Amino acid sequence: MTMRAVVCEELRWPARLPVATVATPEPGPGQILVEVAAAGLNFADTLVIGGTYQEKLQPPFIPGAELAGTVTKVGADVTKFRLSDRVMGQVVSGAYAEQALLDVARAQRVPDEMPFSEAAGFFIPYGTAACGLFERGRLKPEETVLVTGAAGGVGRAAVELALARGARVIATASGAARRAAIASMGDVTVLDADHAGLKERLLQATGGKGVDIVFDVVGGELARQALRALAFEGRFVIVGFASGNIPNFPANHLLVKNVDVIGLYWGVYQTHLPERTDAMFEELAKYYRQGAIRPHIAASFPLEKINEALAELVAHKHIGKLIVDPKS
Image (cartoon, rainbow, N blue to C red; front, side, top):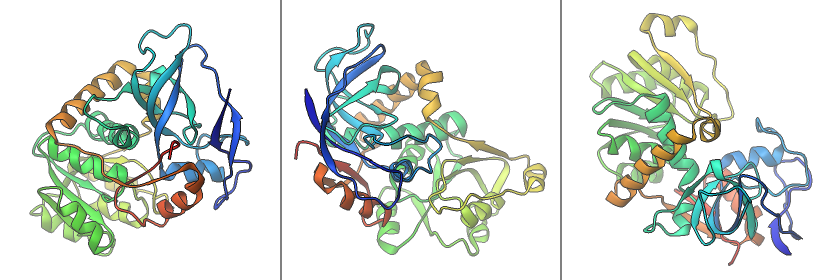
């Protein structure tokens, strides 16, 4: 059996990725084979293709870390899923293809009400945001949360989840259109992403108290300024470095305010704490059914347009999630 798939033949970014006919994989122990209905594009995919991600792969490989689709085969020891189940999940690689292997520990059922196009943009953004806010950030109702890079997939999910938990939300975004999109999501104070004077603007927005949690996907000087606006016993959750600049935090600032700087790498939660991950997705499904959260799919591309899709992702040409549809 063969299938169509995008193939990364060398570690380089920017890259031109061909679509090739390759062998369809077979599920091993703890795995299911999924007919991919849609695959989500993530910034980390470009790092994997360029060889700069923390999990470095050796070419040739099929890129793509997020997918949704239907189970077509199950490993001999798999009991959690059956044939024809609708699933979504995260893979180390392989999502940009007609079929993909998915470890059971990193898979969840797609709610009946959720189309595959939305499910392809749900697992990583909402799983990351929920883990960062609820598990790592210990968010309580009525606390104040700052979400940087709020117009991106993970940032947008964090805004929705913080609002769903009853928090006060402040968000940063670049460009008037992006700020307007975030403002339309609800009771959100939206600030320009320029780091100049950010500490003062945050203190003004909170009546001088500061923010309880910073959910930071940007890094760089923006993160350093946000740290300075943390309230007493605040929590700074490091999610990523979309700016390309990894910040250094002065230890004396952490000490005098009794604040926590917390790393978030959600991938290990899925395998190390599967019961908590399952419970988290049950809560996310409840929020989805209530209409409190909803993935915003900005554009869909066929496999043959993967290079254009990734270029538009990096250029921030869309507000919302980009997906690949292998059947189109």
